[in-house]
Image 1: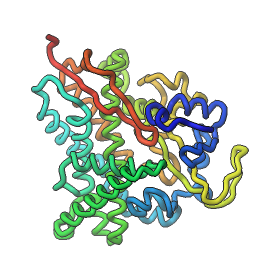
Image 2: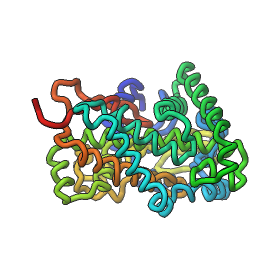
Image 3: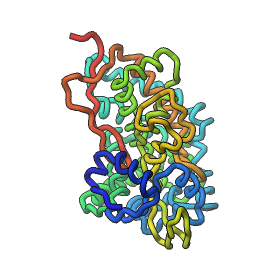
Length: 386
């Protein structure tokens, strides 16, 4: 099946719906990959790591960012994840990070609460996600703006399936900057251990190249997903005042709002795999080294599981959604993201900024991306209307 890459980047959902209907497992020559688009097929295949392997020696992530735990399978993946996970397990998030998330979010709101208007993407979403990620990674000396720029450069780089040399160069520059930031912090971390990923992995004796690759992995996904979810969910609630009323009245939880938004507009819409051995599935013959994309964004709008899947509905049962994947590669940062966005960033802004609203005379909010997707700008105002 052919696609127009530019249109797919602007809005992949109509094309994905067509794929689910007529060709749920289809090769897309413009992407050089076979896309799997139905929820059950993804849920089944993602768990079959002996065939649908995350180990991709020549994959863009390995080449540009280093071989991290996301690109490993089996015992190799489990051991690395075992070292990494304690920092951001649900228990550690509750014990260590949840209180910090409240503090840093209030501090960020203090910066612009008196201004009456702002663009939520740079001033709230990027800042909140970035400040939280600085603490979690241990790179506390960097600016959150730099962290966001590095994250964007890396996610653009690993989704650069058309081979744009400028995108690749920006990604390489970002990874070099992260290596420099790690170098700046290593001595302090080794002298005084803390709960950050850099400290925990270093203290556990993880080899330096693994530490660096996993810090880059954390920045690449750990910045953009909460960033896009924060800005996008606020926009969605302001666009759907009936849905906002349900949550402010206590009929649904802020966590449920977060889950429904991420089902509706998946911040991370795709995960790549390499075919490790000959395999037949769904009437399709897969050959070794074939590239496959699990399209989580499509699974989350699968009509077999979700009625009116193109609608934003905070009362929806989102249990079947694959926002954070499935199987052994279920997102390790899910608990931190749910806490930061669902428990803190969303309720805090509506609590602090009375009369929050989209700017009525501004341009429509634009979303872009298919592998990663979020709003480019969300201008808002609050307070008394003039």
